[in-house]
Amino acid sequence: MEALKCSLRERYIETYKECKKFKYFLRAFLDMVVSGEDIIDVTRRLSGFATLFACKRMDLSVERIILEPQYRVLFTTEDLRAAYDRLAQYEYEDLAQIEAP
Image (cartoon, rainbow, N blue to C red):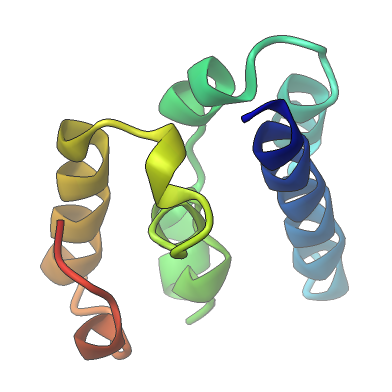
């Protein structure tokens, strides 16, 4: 489980780098991700969805990332349902490709 948490942390760092490409600097996001705090607790507090929505990059949202098959086991059904519902609310175009929790 720790290896999977490390993988999620690395995925978030890659997300940060991708966001920088379109001038969206998530310094608070990066600070939280590299803080050493449990990545699951960090995930539950992360935000930035509105900007990613506006930039049409919801694929970089925490909600989308935690719904990736390899990370689903780290989260509760409630966490996954909330992420899925939020993507649905904002009409995420690739929602049909995601297994509903």
